[in-house]
Length: 503
Ligand code: C2O
Ligand code: CU
Image (cartoon, rainbow, N blue to C red; front, side, top):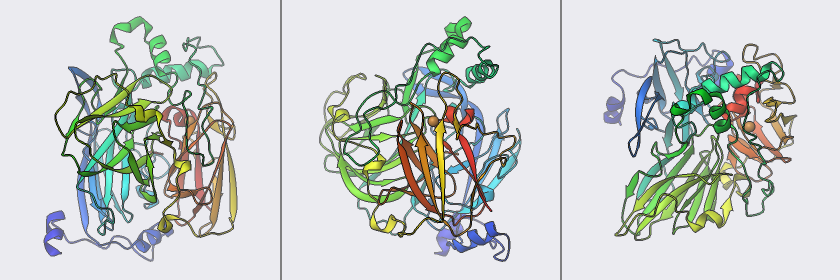
């Protein structure tokens, strides 16, 4: 009511958009909304973070690692002011939201970058409940620690639970700033000259997840996946300065496995976990020792509930699960796919010793679910319709040349509209992601959500396994220019990115 409105904003809400304006403004007006505003300030800044266990890192954050979750209620208008205290230009991209195109935060496509010392206020309706997150869309800045959850609450929340915990996963592979982007830049320079670089990449090949499946069987087995060369590249390039290269870490809520966050609760309590993989380069297999997880949502959309032992969470993906807590002390372990390294948190509901950091709960090898094993909840599926347009998008490239691309053509941010994937407003569009590489790629689409397969989940980010094709469809109902790209930030930045444009 009025009291809440006053608490959220001192000024009355101005009309959000001119309904007779541009197609973007009209699409926004069609979202309606409560008119209630949620003002927040996000300051991107150079920061020293404490990762636990005496480990500190000098990096870039939104003031904490992870950034403080932003919460709205579905229908509210988020009014988010970004202050850029970084030495580089930046932006905020609202991952997973079907928002107005000019607020999507992709320089130079949808906005000018926010210069050092500058600010920009994003304003858009958050019309769909769900678990989202935000990060810059400039280079690989997110990998330094510039990310935070965005939770859009459902005013008619159908799930019953006692507590809610947000769980953010991240790789911290160089152990210093969280990103080897300096090394990465040099690596690319070296490779751009046709092999003139001569950097030893350490022979880290990426075998991919050879046993995985894209078609609904119930298990995604091991095999390497996820991360690949960063340690190799970092060590090689910083070789003269090896004293600065510390251990890689995998972080759960910004803390290392040896000194984890502890969730305290009581036996029998029912908890909703909102899980976000903010890692730039690592997929995680997540399990809570001694418990099974009931999957309720992925990428914000409800699915038919499934009980699993573990989840495979690709970069950029989110899962919501419910769990009823047992009595004791349990590790919530995020195992880096393809590596014997993990991050974790602890759940304490009773007496007992915490398991050692290296302990691996048996659930990690139990029934593991990937998104392609899920089915959309009835209200989340798209109506059946013949596609008006099909884009076949081949994922190409490899580690040797680091020539990640779509359809063999690396994307050029300096000329983003050179070869767009065109769609028409109102069309049903089918995307066929065909993986021609031996790594797997979490493919993400901005501004829309697609349905995976015939009755798979509604998502914005989907893992495409080596040699596999993932078919997904969406309604072209949000005019503008939208990125589609691999959410391995290093693949995307190398060129595995494209622009989807409304004609
Ligand atoms: Cu999470 Cu194009 O981004
Ligand atoms: Cu990729």
